[in-house]
Structures are given as C-alpha cells and as structure tokens.
Length: 546
Image (cartoon, rainbow, N blue to C red; front, side, top):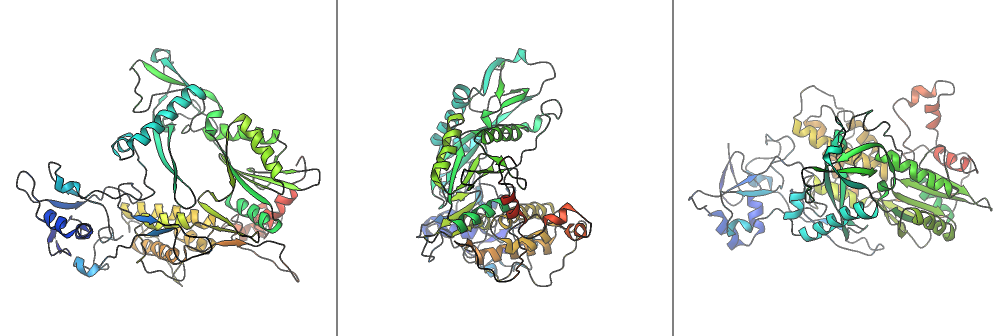
C-alpha cells in the first residue's frame, strides 16, 4: 500500500504518515535537507513510526505548554494543548477508510530516523516528551538532559534509607537461608508539580519489586484502606457550609516507618551495584512490598488514635474528634496524604506537630491540590473542585488537542453496544483499558456527569471493538469541551422548604444490585444507597469512643 504524504513524497506501508508533520515543524531549509538525507552507505533515510510504545509511554510526542492565569479570569487554560491540526485528506485516506481501527497511524506520534549511524542531520529530529513524562528506567534517567538531577535524587534516596531510616543493612549473601526469596529493586522517577503544573522538585523512590514475593512465606495480609472520594467531597462540602479550615499535610517517607513482619532480602538497584557476594537485608518496610501498605496503615492508625481521633463507621480512613465544645474535627487519610478539616487552626497545628515528632511532616498549608483534584476557595467561603489538569493530561495522552471538536453530551443518545467475541484487537483492548481507568478516576473525583457513560462502557473491557472505542472517544470529546467544569460547594446552610430528597453521585456506594437488595428486609446494601447516608454517618460517628 502506498500513501502520499503532505510534502509530496510517497511512503510505503508501515511508514508514518505523520512524518511530513514533523518535518514541517522544522525550518524549511532543515526539512529540505532531511528529505534528501542519505546515510553513509548511500541509502535514503526513512521516517518510521515506533508503534511498539503505548500511549502512556514517555517516548510519545504528546506536547502541551503551561500558562498561568488568575483564577478569576477564565480566558486561558492553565494547561492548554499545543494546536497541531491533522488534515486527513492530505494523507490519502479518510479516517473511515483507514485500516487502523483506533486512528493510530492517522494521529501525531513519535517518528524517528531509521539509519545505521547517528549524524548531525538526524539530531535535529528528537522525540518531544509530554510535560507529564518521567523516566521509566535507570538508562532513560541517565541519558536524559536532567541526568544530574535524577542522579542526585537517587543518591539522596539510597543514603537516606540506609543511614537515616535504617531500612536495610548490607549482608553477606551466604547468610540468606536456603530457599529464601531475594526480591529485586529499582528506582521510580517522579517530577513533582503543583496545582498549576509548575515543577516543584524531582523525586527518585527506591522500591522493591514485590512481584517475586510468595504468599504465606514472604507476606500474609495485604489489605490497606484509603479514604473514598465521596468522603473527601462530603468533608469539603461540610467545610464550605460551615466555614471550616481545610489544610493539607504529607508524611515524609511514610512506608519506611513500619517494621517488617517477615525476613526479606533484596538486591541493590542499578547504579548502586554491590559485590556479587553482598545483598541487602530489609529491616523496615519499603515501597513495593505487598504488605507495605497494610503495615503503614496500622502504624498511622495507632498514631491518630493516640491523638484522640477515631475512625468513622462509614469510612475507616476518615477520623473524627469532638472537642470540649462538641465541635467536630476531621482527618481524611489517603496513604500518606492528610486532609484536615477543623474550625480551629490550633487543633490542626496540634495534630501536625504530634505527627511531625514521630514521622516528619511536610506542612502544605491550605489545601490546593490533592489526589489530582484542584481545590479553590473563594472569598465568600465556597469551595470549588475540579480535575482540569488531570483531564488535560489524559487528553494529551490520547492525542486530543485544542482543535479536537467537542460534544455536548458524554454519550450518544440511544447508544446500544454488544460484546462480540474476537471483535477487537489486543491494541484496542490495551488503549481501551487505559482510557476506562482514567475516565473512572475522573468520574469518581469531580465529574459525576460522565459516571453512567463510563460505567456502561466498562462492561465491555474484556472484549472491546471499534464501536466501543468510538464511544470512549466520544466521552473524551465531551471532556475536551467541558474540562473546566467544577463542583462548587456554597457557604451556609441550604434553605429547604418542604420535603426534598436527592440521590446523585455525591456518593458512589450504589451498585447494580441495589434494586434487588432494597426489596429484602434489612438489606444493608440497599440501605447504603439512601441519599445523604455518608453525611449522616459522619455526624453519627463523631461521638467520642464510637
């Protein structure tokens, strides 16, 4: 199959039809030079697409810029995708005629030069990474333009674990019992950003690769709860209505504070190679171990109880305490993130100081950004929640930009889909699962308007086809048009006249079994679907000792 590129060149099947787009991004003289480039053997240079990388790969050319605006002015998005229009007619085939079911070859992707030797001609075309891209391996980190920053972050992490937290000791490999599992380790790289997407630091986290652990030998129980989105929203609504303070804090290296319940050995990460006869013996819990989350949760639960707080009945990661005036104070715990809601700043300081003495706490002040949710507080005390930054990241990952046409509804009216075995490819399934996971996170956070559409499409996750993927793209187009939508909680109690009942996505405790469960006397699942149940439980469980 032959296709005509925008620059008039003819490409064979398998050659990226977006190559002309990349050449057009360069200056004309440079593009002309590349168009006729040949390697040292006289062979022409070809532009090929690397289709082996998934959409979330940091090697993809997902590009967008960051610009800041005043919160009162909505003339520009804090995170706007760079406009790169695609002209399907110039590719010699329309989207419907393309054999590619997910438009992989009709969108903009990374292209690279396929030649034997590197030359100055090829250095001009470099893959442009998304603002959300971080290295995936040690090699990527050390070959990036931030290798010195990443190297320092890795050194600080390793020495801190060894010297400050005493997480491991270096032992002779001969001391490892016969048959014991030696897990491997690696660094996970993370660029830290604030609510506006501005870089605030670079983190290298040493993790154990717990996939080699054996159940019953290296660990027993693994479950660890986290605060639900519905609980966090309920607390923020309560704070807005009553003018409560909302502050945020982060426990420093949370998982390293717990003691292990099993003997575990680990190899050193790449970049910190030990002699072949040496191995690391873990003395404390570490990120990546299957039981690490549970160990930490039990540790922080005991610390919060020592400060007088008790877990609520509805959510075991929402803690409450009543002071002498019977005023409630709340703490929502999500792994190592703390969201504190209180009428008194002195109480927030008491909690932070108590935890700081035991763990070390980063004081983040009034909450602005937590779990991918941006929090804005207005002068009148109302609170607005949005996931604008996260939504724009998702759109960039799936190649939606400012030229993408939006839509006014998340699902086509009357849409009916069926699952037909073998209708989709493995590539469609991979992209489909990634998209559904991201959309579920958005719907649970601040966008209940897409909840039904996402839930419906999630039923076909095992066997999605072309029509299912088109429906997913419809939701993405809807988010493209509405990414600035916010949930706003007003100050003051609502005025209610008469009996009013609401049942919405403020609580996501419903399931497909609710209707049946409600018909059974005393069915707990049905009872949990009653409007206002989470808020009622927060109040009911605020009694001392409950």
